[in-house]
Image 1 (cartoon, one colour):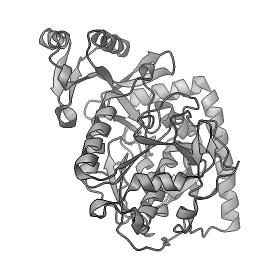
Image 2 (image 1 turned 135 degrees about the horizontal axis):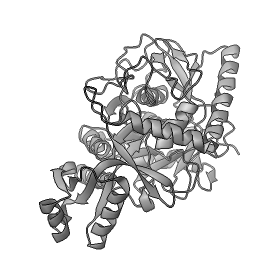
Image 3 (image 1 turned 30 degrees about the vertical axis):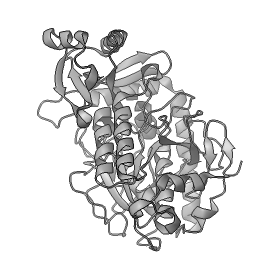
Length: 461
């Protein structure tokens, strides 16, 4: 199967690769090892469960340490175990006065703690209520006509993603040095990377130097601080670097909503989505994904997308939400990618064939190469918790990494590049019609069942 570049995209994109032949061969060997570990790790259920348990232990309350997001596992017949925030429920604000809800708040076990997303949701806590009991409570409320959901854990792809990315973690690669693609005409497009944040390190190789750090620093080593990188450290830095390789002028805004183990709450990510759009983002990149109990759409994401849709109508503009299809390797919905208004991006192998580890289904819109993707990384030493032979990364490091987390920012970057440089895509007030750009980029691309339109953005390793 082939997946040629879109002529529209190719006319603007220039890939800079200064690696020597030996460095390229090293990268090919590293990618083959990484992909081999992915397949082995996915089949080693005992090891995966052990590592998943270790992730959960790392997120238990630690006195005197930094705050952590505690979560529990809820059994689901379709997808096995699903991580949810301990003791939390969400209901629609319009259902908060339901008699059953009011009775549970007035006499227990529920307590209202917040009304996020412009007050459209009510966040309820039931301290001490275990995961399966939470699931049963959601079912009971639903039977009483209440739109209720658990507050899901949002990881970088899925909880197993944190685990198997550790088993097949980033591999060192030679960077291009202080060489950036040429800047072009047009107004840069703002791309919001909603992820683990960005490294505080100010690189000296000209990459990501203009990205505002502000309160969105990825701390890299806090779970706990033991002198090695946390399980998803550098994930946001890597995703942002992919966008910048493709769209060198893009105005990249990083929002830290996940910790450096790659764990966040659905509500926090959803609120960041709305905030990013209201702060001017025209493209959202979400290298995150989760399966849910019963495959039901997660409520906070659904509400955020409603608010973004209303913003588009009010401002007469277009917002493109791009999300990783997930790394579950099966045909089950992964959210937020599976929402109709979100562009779901799956993965291809180095040979441009469908990647067996990628989530897939009729809800996947497009796919690009997701194995051995090369981008900016962070300084530090890998954790021996998940890698028995940890690599050490120096300043200005680059790495190879595998996952749909790294296909989504390729699509985001490609749309940002073309939207900036093709004046015909300007909408009312000059704002780019980013969804129209995506439609033209994918038009005529090969269509593979379960993987959508296939397109090459960054070339193979």
